[in-house]
Length: 443
Image (cartoon, rainbow, N blue to C red; front, side):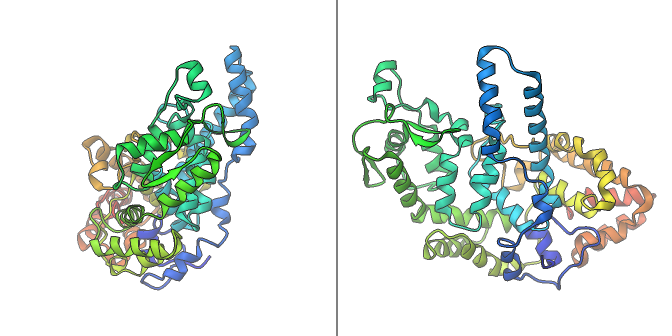
């Protein structure tokens, strides 16, 4: 994979890796977009089992749990997998060579959120990222919306199994009705944001009633389908082929200008600024519409915009991004740092939780904060400083803090930061100054 520039690593990746070759200064859209189609063996080394590989154990666990007795070996195997999933979420971005790819995976998995905050998605949440998000970051948003809507993790997270057509055979027999969770979040968060009504939500819930996605595949249970036509966003959807009609709805919503505006704002806010330039958001939205929801052309417009090249780093790194940047800068993601990484790997999820980002557990259906104020409560800031001091102490006095300033920020480092790192009483304290500085926390 072609080396990135320092600005590309900081703004569109997870920061420079200790000792890595950097390209000439600037932003090269072709170089970054090539990551979408270039294999990344360093990242793939952290790949976890697919959903297809997990279903047997998940189904067996559910059956045994209902029977009141779970095989201890099965329980331990599933527990170990949860630990592996959690650590992978936390550190795969640090180890991967394709930083732009990992940023996009995290961006879209946050925009179309599934959370394990209540524990219900613990067995399926990681495959959501790898199977519903990752394959589509270089494709179309329409395909991503469909994949995420149908994934078991989304179905579980938004309790779609509880949504039954009230006039369906099952609905009449059990006296059950609709659950609007999935319909509402699909329109409000995953796609339109604006331009729909509560009636559209209700009608969409009627269309989605009976959706199922499990070890038997994706399907709509005809016994739970709400009969009759559904009027959604000015279109009529029928019940003679529910899966095809759901897919038609997704394709229509994906192509709406409101969704284009949402996609443009999401990208601009994540990569450029909490309040991005209006012209950038509008240009991204138009590129999205011009290319029939294809995402790479939209990324290209983003990378070519003057704001992408501006030296000012306006965005605050999330805790996950900060941890990844620290691990890369200190050389803990290469062979020479393997032993040091092993000593802290189990502490990383706890550190992230203290900073406000417990792995795989966003507290809201709109995901983790995309603006700085969401990460700057006093306890969160204190936890960032604790992380900086802990990693600096572990590095000890073998590392030159001024050299680390140059490696991390290059000419963008302020004279004040260089001076503070240089004048620290011990080298590790100078390193802590860097790792805990506002400058290192920004991208």
